[in-house]
Image (cartoon, rainbow, N blue to C red; front, side):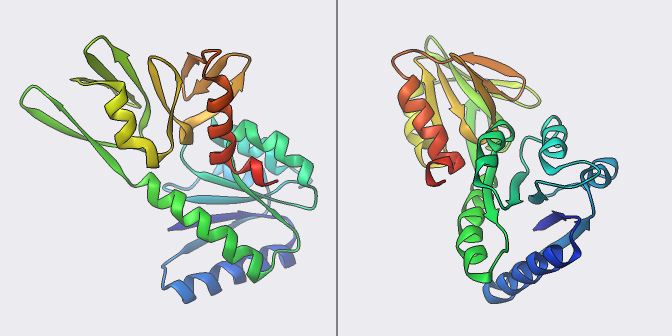
Length: 234
């Protein structure tokens, strides 16, 4: 697991690093921790295969929210957590799919509870779904699957690199992915909530796709999205 800390206050950065190291030792995890002083630094030398980024919201060169928006444009999978003294930043965090917010000063108790939830999401990102078409079976990572589209008796699995077509129903696909944070935004689309980048009016933005949210499903869809993002707890 690779974690980045973007924090201009050395004392706060070291305290968070200590919390991560203690958690890793207790749970026998191998965690590589990278540290950056500001948003510009991490953007200019963005590491590969980051699992989590901890951003201080307020930094003098480039604040965490601005840096997170830039990173989210080319990395929709990394989990972003904001470090702040102010809960109201949760509203802005929705735009970049913030996984959580940690109030300063971070304690080992608060961090432990927080990281338990984060690990569950990281584990979910490593799951797969199998799709059969013809005599071929493809294994699709849920980290790459934006949404599933119903097209008559067929399903189209829209991923980062291609579209997989197979015979099936959205109802059955939904049953398979219920515990993996997929939810219908309308009759024809089953959306990966982990890859939602925003909602405007009756449109949900999923990576490069804009999908319509039906009026009858909007309330439930927004509740499912809020629950996934954790904003209901703030």
